[in-house]
Length: 114
Image (cartoon, rainbow, N blue to C red):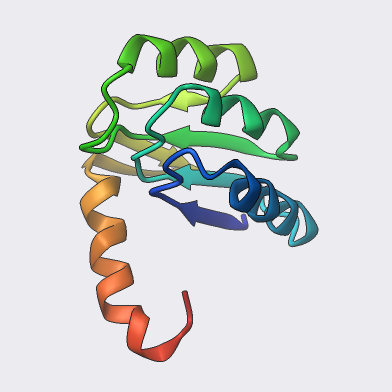
């Protein structure tokens, strides 16, 4: 299973569209959004994703009901602030993706991998 990770899209629809195109080119099966969509319309962009969207809420996500509604409309899964992440038979209970991604970014930034 190919997994993509994204966060802090903050209304930047142009960059998000490029990221979704990249996920599709790489045949990503599932994208984990680690929060900070900022406005619910961001989620609707993922209707163009050729995989599943799973996400959590970030500290800048105030419109929780709008985000949940849009996740449901595109067939995605919003876990709340954290939740059980189930991918390809693997379960990570009470997984806090927002902070996990921040740790990955902090450790990977010097390498340029992310």
